[in-house]
Image (cartoon, rainbow, N blue to C red; front, side, top):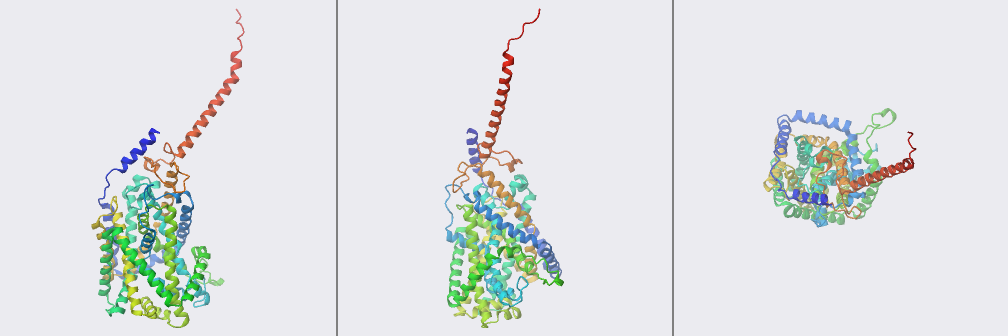
Length: 598
């Protein structure tokens, strides 16, 4: 008992140590070096860079596409296990900690951070691509192609995407809120496998450098979609020219908004902006639902949801394996590689940052609440955009009111989006709200990203990263896409960054193992192991991975008690065996010895 209290007191003293919030120079400068080494060649040699990146994309999708699909499947299995095991009962925080954010604000922040303006873009027109090039070797524009066109968007933005986000969110939340580590870094979550020394070394921090690069480049993908869409909206409203300098001003305006939001912090800026975005999006969707073909959208939406759920594992594992055997009647297809693999790679690149953000805002909730809430609110929010906006565009196509596919192919995707919006009543107001939504959606994504990037490049975080640090990364996120917009090829960077996330498959798989190992170890150390909500109150002074050990349990834990009991039982058995042996020998020893002959 004295040893147990000593451990607890030492743990308290250890937590009372001052937090080092200085900049992690290795991570900070490492990210800048990699960004410049990748960006500058794309600026000076755009054609060669585009050609090389296209070859890398083809190689990765064709040769390693199955690994991305496997990662999606593994993520679903992992979060399902976490949610329904004892680990799901663990509270992210101390027993006295209250839920930091109300459910509505929490849901709006995680949704707005994880999605961005891309949901407006793809929610309206993604079906049109599937309508022309459907999955499963279906005939283009056929009835089956139409059915799957309304389904696949819900699948790509559904539970699998949010499960991928949760793979890093769960371990980061565990180490930050449960084990009270004031560090928001991916590398720290690998400590149960690598050990504390290696995780904190430069080799371990290379994981953080690598993921930050992928995140900035992945963010360029969202900016590459959002900026032309916002510019098109301003052109429709005010007649501003759709030129490059206008796109740059749009990018700068958006950057100023999310920089200010990140500067104000989570409660002062990010939460406020996310709440505005959430309610404005709900109002916009309700308007389209009411004035549009309501019954059609709801009917098709319900069918699409059912089709997506009942065929989820089929869609998750479809690779198009027999496409090369055309002589046997199979059709050559790259649908899984062009869409599902690309989406999983996209979510994978965003996952560490969005996972960090979900972990940061989830204090006071159980792990199960984090898992179920993220998947439910995230998937439902995305599904609403596809059910309402996507099915409205599909209705226009099927009734002949607007040939969306023709506008998409002959003009541009953004032109198709605004052609759809023009068919709604009060089109000018609708376009104004849509453009405002695109700006705020972009800002709410990037204020979260800049906040987390600032946290990653600090050694430790005391509540929030430094304000100057948040501002720096807000403008850094804008700088690189802006430079490539004028002097290089932004699309090349988007592709390069997304598929640079391939090593994250290994890293995130290791994070799953590390999470289970750490949680199982801590669970056996708790006196309230059987309670509905488990509070991790007793943290061992040193976990096995801190000392390079993997087998010894701390004194006072369930595992240690079992080991002691087994040791005592074995000792008792040995004593009983010895007593029995002595009893057998006793009669012979007590017999009188024969007299010695003289």
